[in-house]
Image (cartoon, rainbow, N blue to C red; front, side):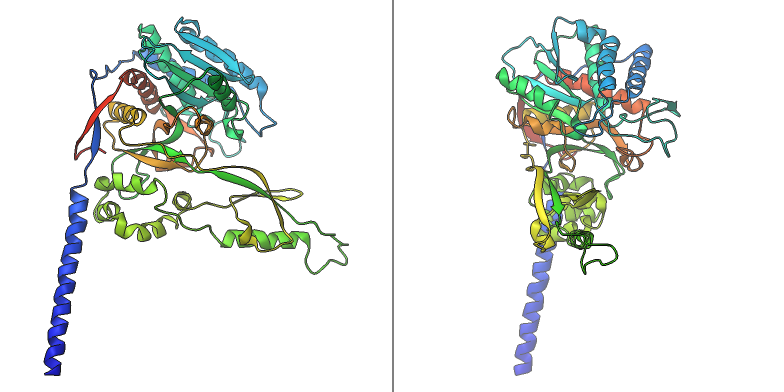
Length: 488
């Protein structure tokens, strides 16, 4: 009898397990294949796509080439090529005569080399917005480059040079788009600003910050800010076959720490058991061996994967649509690659050895050695997360991306680098970071790397993006969303 009872209990438990498993699978598949997608609707006429002439296509490429040839390099906050920055200001005045002569536009130079434009709209009741880009570039030693990095040389349909992806493409693209619109007699309804910083690569304190101070002194509030950032990724995200557009809705913070050991060095013939360099080396080793905690799910990165879940191949689509269950697995996968590890945790970067050591993003208890003194050189917190649902700015960007990039799916993301937009948090709650260029896997390492380049076709799309954005921004509101299974 006892054996029979145990068999009955076992059968009951097995049945309960199977029912539970079936129920779980049903939940997973229902969530995966009925994932809702809200899409904003426009209460204005569809945007008119402007066809560029062959002459204009050549003009925009030549404008970019000329900008690349001016070596506006930022070496540090204290050292910049100011001669090149001044030359760049003269260059854009020559190349974009409509922008600098239009009665609709007020232009001024701030911080010596940064540029602020106000484009006056016809409807003063509409809150203005801001387009940001930066003039300066990181150094580019010519060794191992296929062409000189400041030649602007064209090869096989690509323009090569430092700044073609970061960020002179956007500088020239914004001004070129405005130039073409002005030539066609376009008068925007919504006013907007263009801010071109000259020291973004080394903090933005002398450029973007001066622009912010100017706007604050005038009591300006912005509907949204668009700066460089994420892009249209083609083949970059494993498991997604089509290009997808990621809009950065926040960016990571940063802290720079100085590590110092003050000990008598002694004579090299009679060294102490532990030297200052040895103590520092041990501290550095502990930092490299002890990563910061995995924080996946505590920021907008989870929202990004869920929004893109319908675009992933099976079985990744099930994982992404059900991160309430699978987030521990996904976070472990992400931390294995340097390119995605920065999404899930604070990273540690060992940078400069001089009379001391500068270490980025560390915590004192990792070192656990009171002989190592730690002082903060500079820091700033992670940026607030901007809305990505029915906010005007996000919907305008999504609509423009659909106009220009063949209705590529759109999702929010996290910028692991920092931009000038971080200085604008007091002027708007809607800051977005998106570079309107298609990046393939092999292109990503070219940013700040060797052989930076952009194709002529990609640059034309970038200019078209800003043309459409300026037109799309004239809407005054987004209608309530409707569900659509084909868009994000």
